[in-house]
Image 1 (tube, rainbow, N blue to C red):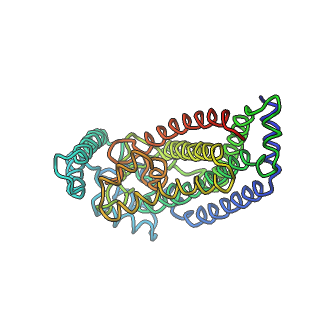
Image 2 (image 1 turned 90 degrees about the horizontal axis):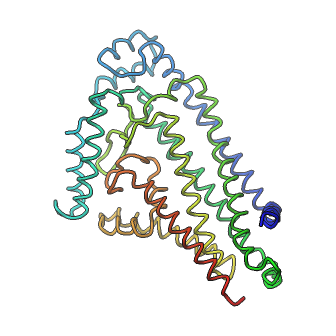
Length: 386
């Protein structure tokens, strides 16, 4: 098995498009991440100076301690923000937020969607109440720049990396499965002693290439930030701090995660979920590449499924068809739903989710279903007339 896998790895590695795609994406990631890291350097330095003087917790005396900092634009912005509402939401606040979302559903107060939405916000209210009582979510995080930098890093940069990894993995998988057809050697290869068992070997080789690509893309995007934040205190601060906000159907609301996430913990969890999304796309491509007679048809099928899974819920959300939206998401569009809501991972997500941790559950469930589909596709291929 492994000699065949190594041979398939060499076949994929000889494709110039693979190396061209890899080099372009890594260079682009390094450039964009470096430029963004440079642009936020003043904000990061200010957070470091603030923590040194005022500490990490936004408590009753925090504003007074901030006034001891040298005058600067960042200091004035922070003091102005502290005059507003920066308290930790209570359970009552979250319960009321849930009622407002139920009203937006237009499905009745006792409908299935309303019940699920109420249950979700009751769970979040309990978490918010515990945070309020313990004060564990009063960290400064990135101050007034929290939402801007957090969204740019986890929504834009990590989202772009995930798309790159998906495209790279799909390319590797479809090329590996379609190469023999392109070279018109399929009948010869399938009639050898190893025979049709070469298909799982091709999938494994393409999967290994996809994983390596994902790691390179992530490292190239994160490395500039790791350099810029090397001495910053934000690594251990809670991302659900009072200054971090999420934009939903009701406007801005507190960015509350289902469990406590430090910056480094949230980065690790988001990267893991991005990896799972890449894996689901890889499995989808494996099914299409095994069942379709040509590489072009496999590319078209994979792209069409992903486009439909993203476009149909978007159209439903835009028109307020929330019953149809959640039905499509739960049945067929889980991974694309997770990918398109990446800036709100591990939060309540407003109307975009019906249960806690939905983006993680639907991605894991899709990966399991697609893994079963891959096994069934391989079984069908073994009995197919070539």
